[in-house]
Amino acid sequence: MTIKLKKQVIEILKVLKRKSTELMAIELAKELNVDYIVLMAAINDLIDHNLGGFREEEINQISLNDEGLNYLEIGLPERRLLNLLIESDIKEIGITEFLNKSKLDKKIFYVGLSNMKKNRWIAQSKATGETKIFLVAEEFSATEVEEFMKKFEKSPILNYSKLSKIELECLDLLNKRKLITKAKKTQRIIFLTKKGRSVKLSEIKELKQVSKLTSEMLSSGSWKDYNLKPFDVTKPGPSLKGGKYHPLVNLINQIREIFISMGFTEIRGPIVESAFYNFDALFQPQDHPARELQDTFYLNNPKIAKLPEKDKVMAVKATHENGGDSNSLGWGYEWDENVAKQTVLRTHTTATTIRRLAKFYRDNEKTPVKVFCIDRVFRNEKLDKSHLAEFTQIEGIVIDDHVNLSDLIGLLSEFYKKMGFEKIVTRPGFFPYTEPSMEVSVYYDKIGEWLEMGGSGIFRPEVTYPWGIKEPTRVLAWGQGLERIAMLYYARKDIRDLYINPIKWLRQQPY
Ligand code: PHE
Image 1 (spheres, rainbow, N blue to C red):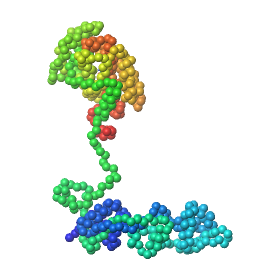
Image 2: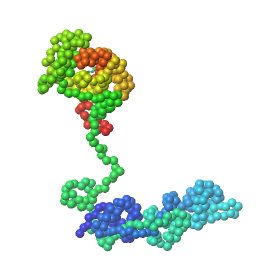
Image 3: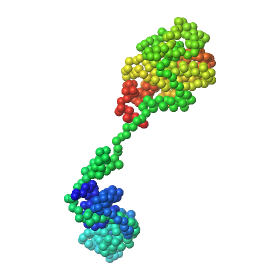
Image 4: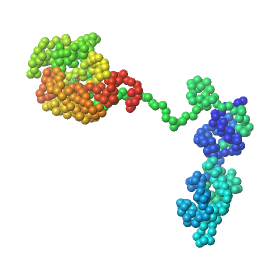
């Protein structure tokens, strides 16, 4: 019957058969240049097939100490001194000159010198007054001690009881030179069984090596007939492509943190909004071009929105028709409640901040109120590399007494500074619901350009009075584009990338 073994187990078996002697496991591991653990795993395979085994034995073990190991590598001092003479072609030399030339520690030099004499490599004479060294031998082959030391190259530990008489003499010499460590330790001794000694290599087949286990191998038990390829755990593995936050989500979270750190609270509002909150409450006349179909998505389902309390609807109607109690003349047209009841996908998050004004009124709240909203808005725009039909606004309001335009500029500067934009400029702008109105631009160092970020201003009395918010209480308001900032942050030239999600780009993003 043929025996199936892993390749590395066969290698070990071969060595053991060739040596036909017992070996210490550490010795064998060194010889095969494998890890001790790997070796013992292989021995287990031999045990499974009753080919080999190991026993533990207390051993008087000897090894070289650090100095001895160093000499094993660079040569004993006498050998190094000899090499120096041969290399420099020196036949005779004064002892002091020799010492200096050797650059050895004095003590080591004399140890080397006395061993050179013992080896009969040199002679010493004082005939001329100064002690001189003469090279006398013609042949400088390795000494017995050197031969013995070489044994430690093969096995770091030798078994005292296995040493020959000559080896014991050498050991004694090295021990006197303080190059040896002795210890009593339990070692594993590897041996072959009778079967292991007699088995012919032709009767042994190598197990097929595979790198993957299949479920089939497991269920049929055939995995035993395979040699699993060992893993190299030092090799880099495939890069992990785990789930992570989308860059836009990360950016939103960062902005959220900034507003929260500035004392703001987050608000949210419906995406399906009434024209009332989206336009009318913002004092946008019902024939305002922004309401036209090309900009606004009107909805058929639901078609009609619920309006707030009657008196508030009436107050808004009055501001449009004649200014109501806001000291304004209004727009001077007949306001139609049915137009206000139309449903739209909100075109800006300003609709949500107006809802917050309504809450301020209903809950009879005290100033100041500082809120922000980061959310989606919709406009019927043609898509291109700088326009989306669905995008995100960063909106906010501060309801407080005596606040003015400087406060608003200060707030926005602070926000953009925290976002990493040092410089901002504001220019006059126009929105039907703010007076004064400002456009905000930030300076982007990396491309050396000013970029428009969005609008802001102080809500007009026509917007705030219907909700009972009157002088000296004012409402600072702003609405900025998130995707603009995202394009700068993530260096995307095409705004659509943020939603099309090129997988390569997403994978490069940090977790
Ligand atoms: N709603 C405006 C827009 O969508 C931005 C804005 C908000 C302007 C608040 C002034 C005050 O562009």
